[in-house]
Image (tube, rainbow, N blue to C red):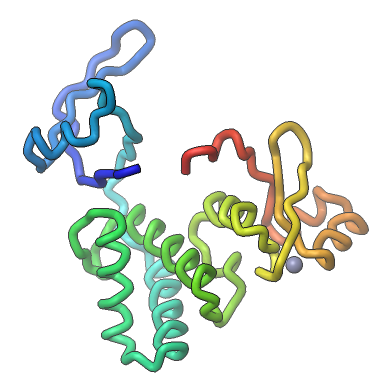
Length: 202
Ligand SMILES: [Zn+2]
């Protein structure tokens, strides 16, 4: 599946039959956009930006993660930042951005991207991924996808809670959840079951 990720501007908005119709401007030629149509239908997700900028906490998380990458690879921190930013931009088809004034949403996506990249490549993080993430829902889903424990990052098993809710835990944390009770355990580790049906196309 190909995705186009572009900044948009909403030019018009009107309500019609319990739906809201948006007229959206995008900085791309029509033929580039039509490439994404399937059977004459263009569809995708729309993310609206509230104009909020990257927070100090997010910036700190990104820099600490880049430092981890730099320690692991031996690359200079500035080069490591450049490399990881470029890889993220390339994968998401977006323009390079600055960590001083990018949007909160881009920073959140970048942190999630870095965590997935680290997990995929077995690169150690200097703290647990759950402490490092800025998007807990996305991280919990990633743990289910990769069958790793959402509390400690070790090999886990995906457990069904109720309905379509699932959580991935290692033996130790699964036992702890059983002893403490799920509710107390979830509050302690700030984790929860994820509805897989909602995330079928993340
Ligand atoms: Zn665990």
